[in-house]
Length: 119
Image 1 (tube, one colour):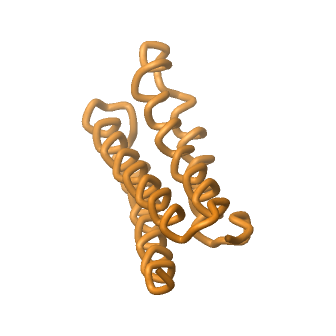
Image 2 (cartoon, one colour):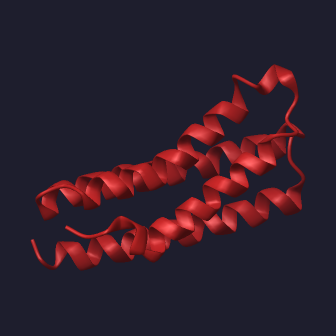
């Protein structure tokens, strides 16, 4: 397929993942294996699935992994809402990160449309 590192959506997912890691370092120890871990795993899964999908031999396979990446983006947004709701993250920070998630999700949708047109 293509070099995933050149994709703007992968770069945006990478930035989001870094921001999630930085934003969860201050979570209490009680959340070390709870919400912080879930957020980090879901965020990392976005980029990982983009990379895996772009390495697959067929467009259908790529679309499947981009769909999984989209699901992971939804999961990140859910966890960010909860992090704010339970007082682990300030509203301004959670809204900033949610905006990044929504941007990544839009970019994923655009890439899926582009690849779908070739199938």
